[in-house]
Every structure is written in structure tokens, then in C-alpha cells.
Amino acid sequence: MELYKNDIAFEMPDKTQDETRQGEALIQERPVHIPSNGKKFYIESYGCAMNFNDSEIVASVLTQKGYDSTRDFNEADIVFINTCSIRDKAEQTVRNRLDNLKVIKKRNPGALIGILGCMAERLKEKLLEEEKLIDIVAGPDAYRTLPDLIEEATGGQKAVNVLLSREETYGDINPVRLSSNGITAFVSIMRGCDNMCAFCVVPYTRGRERSRNPESILQEVKDLEQKGYKEITLLGQNVDSYRWSEDESLRGKKLIELKDTDEVFNFANLLETVAQSVPTMRIRYSTSHPKDMLDDVLHVMAKYDNICKHVHLPVQSGSSTCLERMNRTYDREWYMDRIKAIKTIVPEASITTDIIAGFCGETEAEHQDTISLMKEVKYILSYMYFYSERPGTLAAKKYTDDIPELEKKRRLQEIVDLQRIHAHESNVADIGKTFEVLVEGVSKKNENQLYGRNSQSKVCIFDKGNHKVGDLVNVKITACTSGTLIATAI
Ligand code: SAH
Ligand code: SF4
Ligand code: F3S
Image (cartoon, helix red, strand yellow):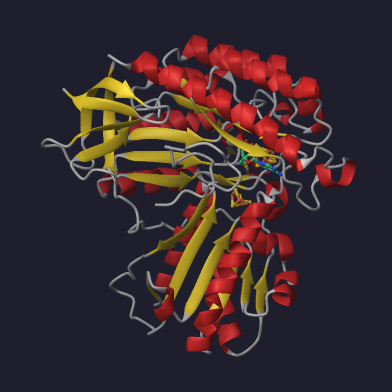
């Protein structure tokens, strides 16, 4: 699988975090009791794990209506592209892909092309004017209506639904994952985002934050366990603000708005319940927000062996003044206090992050603050980007995108070089240690080797022997690169 490198200049061994991915086709079987309607759909996904999980929901909705999926867009009656808007380059990739898809209509004039996801939501009807070959535009909360939209478009009309919802969580739709390795799966626990980070388009493309009913989450997790899955990742843009209550009026409330007597089920409660309900499965989660990550979640992590010891805590910048312009609602001191809490409560946890170089007005001193913070934390891995202005965001309205591209790239390179050193140092320190690894697949470079991750989310490669995909194997680390641990099974 190709990782979508975009403007990220660092190898990314871990596919479950927030990096964006490019163009994977999804294949899903129609339930046996539902007769085929004779039409095939093809779906290709870009962006974050949540978008990929959404494609599985789309496939569920369509197969329930008798559509069959195909891995070959040439034989599809409907081609869907599930898109990402996070940086300009992500959108450019989709536009280039659309150029390639023109051949579909030449071969089969009746074929439909649908744009789903964040770019659909951001551009709405404008997409239809800009890209004439598009027939359907559907935002992230409109997937239940896709069968109707297809019908409308089949009748020759352009079909659009970009309504965002305050309730939709697709909680009752069980995504079946036939395209995956059958070992690891994503489970969405919430949708949308109520933070207003100045650089970020997500609140506009995904709408208001809403949490999914814990019962439907547990049901999905149990179902995955029964199907033989060994690891799940609980997904949300901001998992720490997960909040469920039987009392509907309490669901959207922020922590500070709640009274002591209000009964709410928070992320720490959910994590603990999931850990208890599937004791033999590994549990990961992503993404934490520094402002909301409190000690309770860390205590739950420390208490349960089956919760992986890894925290992804995006910092974005090491400078308090820059963080303020970014509207991240924490400063460097608060962030470092959270790092201290992780290192104290879950000492074996690895820490990873996201960093943006060259945000509006970033001075050299502010950039150096990011460098010094990296030296203090020593992340095992970072997703690093240079700032890309997104229309309509707070930053686009309030600030000038004033750091020249060359300078953004120089700063990013400095961050990337330092990250590589830290990743390598951390891997060298693991040589001689033993870890339990969940085998996820056969190495692409050498079919006699397997790869998997340890609890800290580091990728380990080792000789196959009698082991197979899905096994938990104890390995001893013998060597490393900056991205991978080389091991032998013991
Ligand atoms: N919800 C997560 C991250 C969502 S987007 C969080 O709050 O951390 C994933 C990452 O993309 C962000 O952490 C940020 O580092 C990066 N990103 C978002 N908008 C960006 C922009 N306009 N330019 C460059 N990078 C951006
Ligand atoms: Fe974007 Fe901030 Fe929400 Fe993350 S928390 S999705 S960066 S607005
Ligand atoms: Fe994800 Fe990209 Fe949308 S990162 S939420 S698919 S803008």
C-alpha cells in the first residue's frame, strides 16, 4: 500500500495514525440475503483513518441495497472518490485523479462519478461547475442518502447532499471490512470537531462534534472479536472529548459546563469498558487533544495490559505565542505538563505527534521553540507538514500566509532531520529488549519475513519461522533503522 506522502517528508511506518493515505480501492461483499441489483460500485479513499472508515460505511449502505463492489473502476457503474481537504496538495491529488477518470465516461457514457468526503463538503455545488464529469456530490453526513442520490443521477440530474448533521454517527451501520488484513480494524467513536484550530478545515467539512452510543461501539468491537480481529483503534478527531449520556441534553456539553451530579460516560469510561469487554484484543486510540487529555485516561491505560502503550499527542508548535495564534487553547507549559503526566503514569508509553512548520507569522525564534520542545519530548515518530492555507478557516480570515514557501520548507526540513535522529536514538535504545508483536502481514521486501507492531506502535520485522499473520509473537530486537526495529522471534 502506498502512503500518501503529500508534504510529509518522513518515512511513516505506522498506518493507523493521522497521516493521510492515497487512493485505496475498497471491496466489500453484498450480504447473501440481499439480491443483486446488477450494478457495481468502486470506491477509492484519500485522507485520514476516519475517511477510510467512512468508505466502509458507504460500502455497507450500498451493499444493503443490492450493489456489488469491484476493485476495477473500468467495470464499475458508479465510481466514488472519498476525498480529503486537509492541505491544498490533498485536493490537487484528487483533481489529478479525476483527470485520469475521464476515460471511464468515454468507455461507458452511462457510468456515474461521485465525490464524497471533505472536499465534497468544502466545495459543495461549486465542484459540479469546476469538474464537469462529476454527477454526485455527497458530504460526510449524507451517506445514508447515497442510494437516492444514485437514482437521481441515473435519471440525468446532478445529485447533491452536503447537509451536515448534529446527530448522525452511523452507529447502527456495521462496517464489514473485507479489504483489510482481518487482524486490525478502526472503530469510529465520534464524528466532527468543535475545536477551532485556526489552520484547520475539519470543523467545516465534518461539522459539529457528536459521540456515538457506547452500546453500538461495544457491539461492533465484540463483532470484530468474533470475526477473529486482534486489534482495534478507537477513532475520533478528539477522542478525549467523547461524552455520552442517556440524557440527550447533556451529550453536547463541554466538561466545564457539566455539574458534578450530571451522569456522563467519558472517554476514560469508554476505554475501560472496551478493555474489559474484549480482554484478548489489543486496543489503541487516536487522536488525543492536549487540552482535553486528562490523567483519568492515562490511569486506565496503565491499568489494562491490553491497551497499547502509545499516545499520539499533536503539539503543532512548541511556541506558546504561535499556539495562541493557532487557537490551540493550550500553551507550551500545559503541553509539557501533559507529557510529564504520560511519562509518570504510563512510563513505558511511546509518544508521537503532529507538527506544522511555517504557520502565519511564525518567527525564527518561534520555530526554534518547536525544535527545543522536540528535544525535550523526544518523539518516537512525528507527522510533519508545512502550513497550507485553507480557505474559510480562522487563519485565512485573520492572518497573512506570510512565510515564503522556501523558508517553510527549510524549517520543515530542520524538524524532519531532528525527528529522524530522535527516532533512530529511540530505536537504538530498544536493541536487546524483548517485545510482544502482533503480526499484521508479510514484509513487502522479503516474503520470508513478517512485520507487526509492538505495544508502543513501533514496526518490527523478523523471520517468519512457523509464525503467521494474526499471531502474537515475542521478539528480541537485534538491530534497527530510523523507521523499523529488526528482531528475532524467541
Ligand atoms: N484532530 C487532530 C488532527 C487532525 S488533522 C488534532 O487535533 O490534532 C491532522 C494534522 O494535519 C494536524 O494535526 C495538523 O498537524 C495537520 N494540519 C491540519 N491543517 C493543516 C494545514 N492547514 N496545513 C498543514 N497541516 C495541517
Ligand atoms: Fe482540526 Fe483542531 Fe479539530 Fe484537530 S482539533 S480536527 S486540528 S480543529
Ligand atoms: Fe480526514 Fe482529510 Fe477530512 S484528514 S477529516 S479526510 S480533511
